[in-house]
Amino acid sequence: MHPPVPVPVHGPTRGAPPPPVIDVSAGRGTQMQTAPGTVVKVDSAVLKFGSPGPVSDILVRRAYVAGYDRRLRHPAWTAEHLTLASLGKSVLEPRKPDEAGDRSNSQFSEDQSIPAMFRAKLQDYFRSGYDRGHMVPAADAKISQAAMDETFLLTNIAPQVGAGFNRHYWAYLEDWCRRLTGSFADVYVFTIPLYLPKLDADGKWRVTHEVIGSPPNISVPTHFAKVVLTSRPSSPSTPDIPEISTGAFVLPNAVIPDEAKLESFVVPIDAVERAAGLTLFSDAVKAQSKHICKTAKCEVIVRRFDDAVKGSSRKAITGPK
Image (cartoon, rainbow, N blue to C red):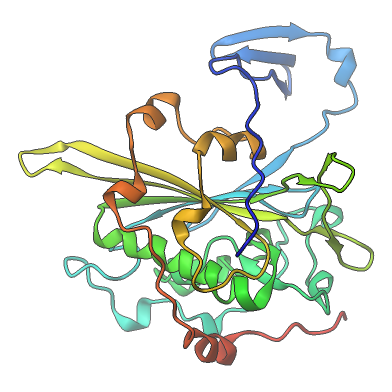
């Protein structure tokens, strides 16, 4: 059996004001926003020679949006909106075969939009022992070849254990997310690398993780979260009133047996938000939504034959040039 996932259960009081946001704009000096609509003037001399940051680069792609963490050199989060049409499965919006993306035509590549000193490099993964794990799966971006190619940018990649995780149970979870489009009109998927504490023999909790690359460059997450929000009409008579379902799953970056139950990885959305330092949904959405495992079957489909398919199309990690 896989070990229980340690998720922090403490955090700031619900409803507490958000942390201040510093804004440095040309000609306006330095301002600090403490709450929506409230701007406080700050001594511009403090940041006279520049403002540290950004914390994350917001990357808008054809099939997803991501926040890239320059320190860890992998996504802080990714967000997708899946529908039958976006996956090319809608009978009302059929897609021509030549319009769809083909992963065999895609290549992993460094993201040139990120400054070189903060960029994840192809050579970092060479002989690292980890797969280049997609946060947004290539199979979610079949709308075009360009969209699929963007999932192979290293700003969408994090180090994942290969056999038993990235190539198996994690892939089953990705497939489960896509299959939700058969029951819901809209499926929103957030993927979040996490660094969770582990209880050591001395009774103290510590966060420890590997860093790959030469020199060490990319952090290896201890866990990954998938958070979903689905929407469909609440009834045929009230098509404009949506039924919202939500759910969060946290998986260790480790070998997970095929027989593991998906529901064993369920955690509160609040726990993921606290661990990641993110706000995914409003308190109202979380309070009023149903749990996804109550409105859909939380059960993955084991597809070991994917090994042969993925093996034939997986790009070898070449040596540094």
